[in-house]
Image 1 (cartoon, rainbow, N blue to C red):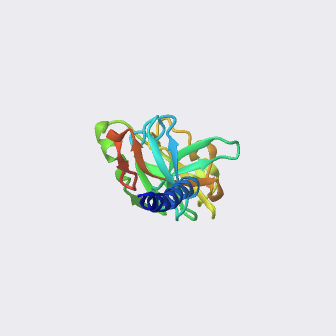
Image 2 (image 1 turned 30 degrees about the vertical axis):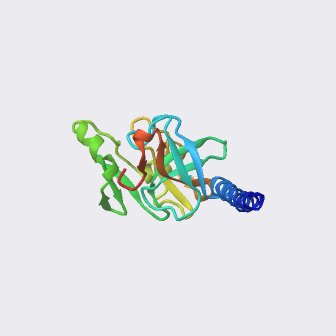
Image 3 (image 1 turned 135 degrees about the vertical axis):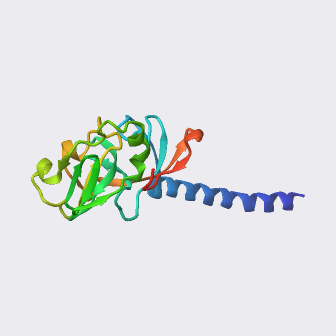
Length: 183
């Protein structure tokens, strides 16, 4: 019987150690939890929701990213303009390099108030004096366009300020969802 107990512990101790190490590695380097603070990303993300942030991978248009500004403030915003893009908004429509690009993640909220402008008209040149988003930078907006502090106020975001992208809302469980280009 004592040999059975030693085999039992000899098996479980390394397994528990390995599982703990893997969990700490993933938590520290690959996927990090973050609590949303504020309402600038509504209706996609709400204050007090908790999301998992992937801190690796390529940034794509409409990804929801986490930005650590040089002043230490952290923002959660959506990538609208990629490096090299010329962009503008006219009549609540996004134009990238002269082509209308649909923002599916806003369709529902715009339909709820069809007679109100959701995103005010502007061009990158009017806001920043630049024709194109600089290389190594992104133009970001909050989904709650009327109140969001974003690239319209603080300018483009340098790639090295991006600490990751939000991939899933995990808390509260009733709000569990993947965060993608369409939501």
